[in-house]
Length: 342
Ligand code: ADP
Image 1 (cartoon, rainbow, N blue to C red):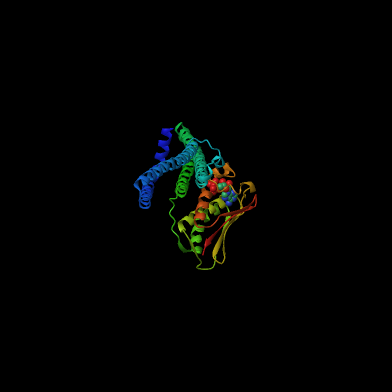
Image 2: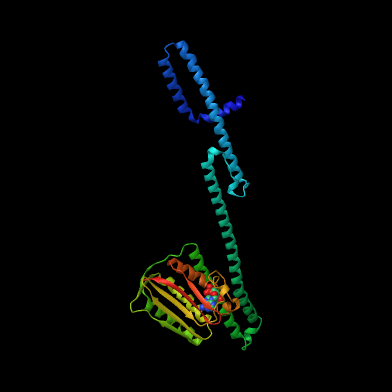
């Protein structure tokens, strides 16, 4: 009992300055009002006893509240709550209850986000290992066959070396794309925006792809916009976007054409890259921008694809405050489009 009272009083003594001031004030008033010392002293004594009683009450309430908060925090720490609705404090702590609930929900959200991130990281690592394994095993296989004697067989030696070389190119493409995507996703991609002339920019890209298109007997068509039209963006990053989209358009087209169309709008230029290729099934359309997602794995690998190209394109276009859109009809062709600020 005494211990309890001692504890109550000590926990209410956070107000000791106010308490002493109040007592002094009351004593002075009593001494001024009550002239007889024989009456004033018992009165002061009574007030001190009363004050101790009040201190005990305040201390008791305060301890109860602090214990309640301590228990709630410790239950959160020990994962005893499934949802924030289970957190209930007494009426006079409603404001604090709301804050604790919000903190609990935020912590839950953060944990779920970190778990998702961790899962994505493991999945990404598994994908990367798988993608690296394919060309490395192939190169190893060809080199071993050559070392085991095929090097002296003029019918196959050149062919095997060409195959091994093809896989080293795939490996290097994959590493370049991996470096790009990790730079982009870690926020290290530095953008350098400026105005540039779009027609000559696309002309220079088309020049680079002419040979690839000719080899497949595909017409590569560019319909320029009005002379001198300027757009705003990071020229080098946009070159990467055009390279990826054109490479895909030619890779996944067996006959017909690949066309780059520029549609001038009031504030934007709409860029369309249209092909008459194999097309993309409807159910895959919203997944092709995911890392390593391929509609036809065998075909993508055969044509040197890494499965990362469109994920990189999406990031770059979004960094330009735009959106990459795709429309496609299986067997008829695909069209990728995005807007650039004028
Ligand atoms: P990849 O390196 O495999 O080409 P991308 O990320 O560039 O990877 O593309 C993802 C997938 O989307 C490709 O594997 C392919 O199946 C499909 N795809 C992309 N562009 C086209 C296109 N123009 N025509 C048909 N399919 C396409």
